[in-house]
Amino acid sequence: MTEPATATPYSGTIPAQPGPRDVTDALPGRPGSTVEPENPEDPVGATTSVIPGAGPSASRPGERATLRLRDGGDGGDGEPARYAPEWLQLRESADAAARAYELLDPLRIRLANLPGRADGFVIHDIGCGTGSMGRWLAPHLDGAQHWVLHDRDPYLLHFAAVASPRSAADGSHVTVETRRGDVARLTSDALSGASLVTASALLDVLTRDELGALAAACAGAGCPALLTLSVAGRVELTAPHPMDQEITEAFNAHQRRDGLLGPDAATAAAEAFAEHGATVKLNPSPWRLGPEQAALTEQWLRGWVGAAVEERPELAARAGTYLAERLEACAEGELRVVVQHTDLLALCRPVGGTG
Picture 1 (cartoon, one colour):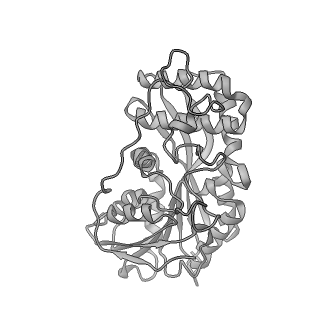
Picture 2 (picture 1 turned 180 degrees about the horizontal axis):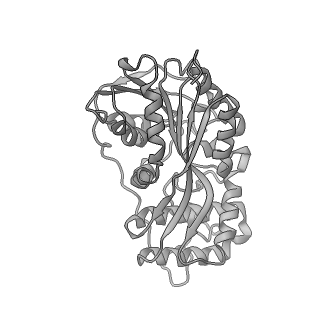
Picture 3 (picture 1 turned 120 degrees about the horizontal axis):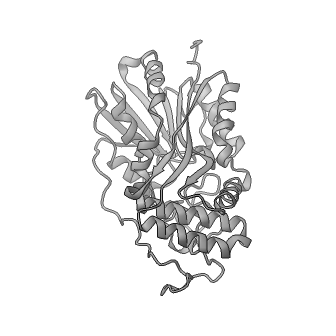
């Protein structure tokens, strides 16, 4: 279900909004800290100091704040589902650096051979958030582009529309419209006339059935899909710590809650698109976080450990010490993290064609 499209002919930078929340270097509950835990059952402190979207929600334990796809029209409290633009803005440069540029050439070749190319491309951005995918991809493609931005949150759709890119790689015009609706219920009819479907950090918060529906919709519309930054379930931190593997395994289990695909998403998507006759290409797209990304690393750490503890509460005491050590190393510029993701390009057969 979608609401009527809203055409937006302007673009620019993300409008003024609250910046990333200040998170104290002192961990709540840490010995010597002057900050008391807001929740005695949360000694890690992740759910009280993490930007919504980076980790589990304090108000709704077990809910992934980044995206709500299948519940009612709002978050249950009368407000539309929302995840913090601060988190999206914080991670945007890391996302852009991570995305697999190797997939752009085969995508450009497919787009160049699409019928009706002279009229420009129609690109659907699924779960667009604040529109970072369009800001990254549109300047890498030649030709006029019309972006259709899909999200359930009108607040995020506003940011995405006003911050949309103005022009393509060759200077051609880029226009945008927004559609509010449940991105897990897209059909091939909704994608009729699409040249490309894109999404970023979406597949891992879908169920297998929802992923199958998305693959079927793309195949039915005969359009390729570029689906980036699906979590791969592998993390490397310096220096290695005995708890790294425990936290990783608990976090991955948390990602799979309620039948979500989590770290299995990219493999499942490759299989789903291949079943519809698509040619599928997978490339790694790791975040590489160092001292320059300390703010992002700190928020990621809190969310990562917080989700692990929510999944395995018995880890809480040791995880609190672990997180304190990792945050201290981050603050001192000594921590480097590689968070593995996977990008997928599915070249679906054009409608009526064999390509």
